[in-house]
Image 1 (cartoon, protein in one colour):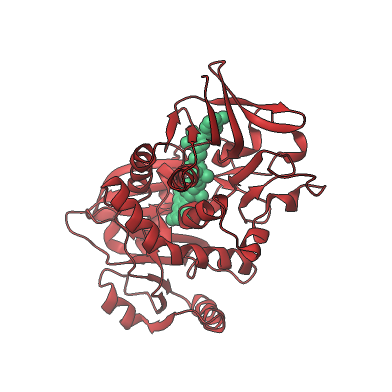
Image 2: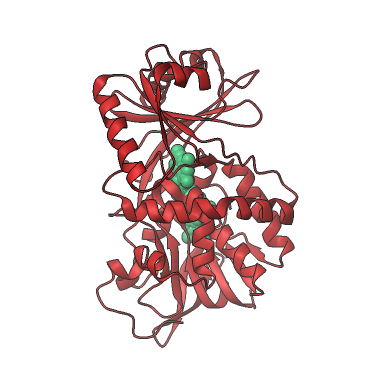
Length: 378
Ligand code: FAD
């Protein structure tokens, strides 16, 4: 392919497409290379935009990124819906975290106090108040916390809208696998495709999700420590909506959540497994999901199974993404978003297209895993 781009993005999941669309909107000549766009983790994701209910005490930097991105979601969704003509099923009705036993209730009290200390909106509720909000909840639910600012979106609608919007903004989609990087004088100057063709670019952004850590031809000093974290998830079909908002809880020690879709579907997820690049859906994985979800909302077992799927989250050692320039001139990253890539897409796109926010950029800088400071960044 005899072409030269300002920006070439490797990987067309929610992250790569968001980065490319934003950059194209700012007047750059942009391409995305992916043999199967929107087929990775973004295809499996539930789409919760839930930094508050997902918060843990040790992950305050991640919470800061999540809140900054959540704030951008309404404008991002409106702009994307307008640019593509697609509906994204973006809803902001909050997440209800529920608890059963006294240990769970104590943990929820701690979480509510922590969230309040951070100045965030969250309301502690009794079991009865929870059931008033969500009548299908199990009678055994003894209390809950409503994170009213949390939202959700349908990630498949988002990636489909991004593909349309990118094309309308003049972006190019190259349906081919990237087999290596082109370099000259120590700088990345483009990519080599599996078809044998080369594509030149002033800047290459690695956004290949869980595959980012194993892209062939990466300079060893820039190879990101990204690993696949398997998640099995299930879509159930209901003749009428059974929930008004996202519901989550800890059952048998694992997190389980249910996310309602606009068409009545309910997404039920998700397992977290360290299984390498294995995307098999297993009987045990589905059994655990159903067993735990039934404790929260007993009626789920009556619903029709619409789909079961497994995706690979791009995990990093500190659970934070890698966004920004690397030690190698011409090579940037937008990867490692682990459990929160849908949530973090608007922020990632802004940071990759020149928005200056030193605090947020330093939290997710790829340089934290690279031994030497950069000599020269493009
Ligand atoms: P992906 O969507 O995996 O895209 C990577 C792309 O790179 C793929 O299209 C692939 O084809 C391409 N690629 C790979 N290798 C190459 C190559 N050599 N050349 C070219 N292209 C290549 N996040 C949330 O915010 N909220 C949620 O509720 C949520 N739920 C989830 C539930 C499950 C079950 C899973 C698995 C994930 C969930 N996530 C959620 C996490 C979220 O899905 C990911 O963080 C996000 O999708 C990562 O996006 P990505 O674009 O980096 O990767």
